[in-house]
Image 1 (cartoon, rainbow, N blue to C red):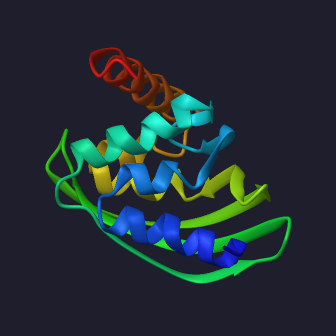
Image 2: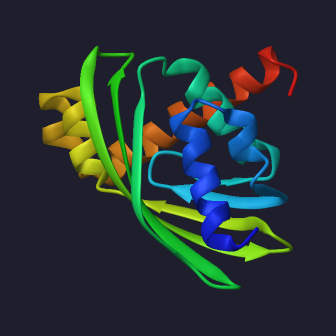
Length: 156
């Protein structure tokens, strides 16, 4: 499988709520990062996708502009879902960068506007505070605590 197809398989699995399909695209030593979780490695990165799909029954994933060569690749993707803590609809547009080795993704970096995400997810509080380092740190602490709890409960 070429790396363009690997990226497509990752997002097609995501769109079909197939966490195992997603994590099978990752190397065991994957390094993932994004504004909401910070940096995650190995099983934590894989379990993040499992957790997110287990919590998001209504998520809609679309992707485009997939490009890849032997070493690196990119894609744009969009997630639409209802944020469970507030019941607010979120539309998040993400730019993804990938690095590959041995037909697996070894590094995955998602970039998105955290201020815009907090505005969608949290409403006026997110609009007022979403840009701040304080809010970013608070979000990362909360998401990582949820991930640790999910991993412990599911014995992963």
